[in-house]
Image (tube, rainbow, N blue to C red; front, side, top):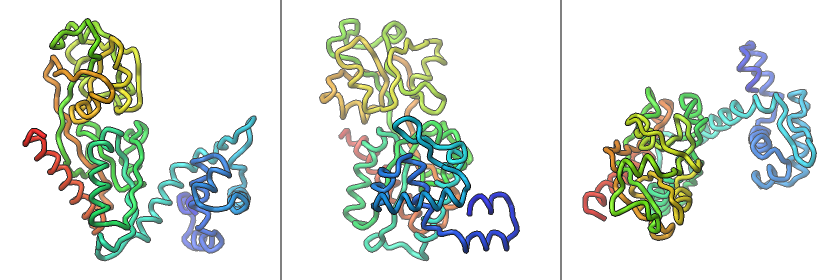
Length: 324
């Protein structure tokens, strides 16, 4: 379906292709491309392994390609299958949006599925509140949360078509609708037994101590650490992580230092065993937003989601004001 339409064939050819193609194969194709394994794809879909194997056979005949080929004890995607990953995800998201659409949205009755991208930091701070709110007012609504990936942000204009939105700080995306959520500040975390740090951190400490940082990529490196480079300080990176939640645990019991969002740092300090200290430079605050594709603008369900996220963000801001 996607290949024929995407290549610009005549409408009559596209309609004929659609008539001859079982669109129920689309979720199976998506699962196979994600899992690269028939058994895991069957588990993901809630189907039997023979049923998925049969579907894979039909897909192979349709595309004239193996899609999955065995290499040693595992399967790998063929070059064509690699090409199909993004358009398959996009097509499946479009199908979901078509059949989820309704002229109005009633949270208490809806079984809509919302798909959101957010970091583990945003999930810890915002996600748990959203889950509780859904349980209270929209108990049948389903929520799919995926970890934000640099590759997704790099191609956000197109990738946002596949999800309901992404929670991300300002500074990464432009020309995309955004619903502002909440602000946060950056703090430093060190181990309590780090004898190189006194009651306060200094810029000399920041320059001398080894660092734990997030992925050192334009769309993943913590903005506060990027600011150091602008100040002429090159962090001596010892560990690069892909999880904000992991950062304080990689600092504990070592001479390392890291920057972390204040809401998350104070929450994890006791569990991870770290000290939270102010940054010795004027760190630009975090301003989290919910970024979404313009095609969602008039969707009643999406309007409700945006309003709900904005309300939760307002509650977080009020708690900060009250010093909670």
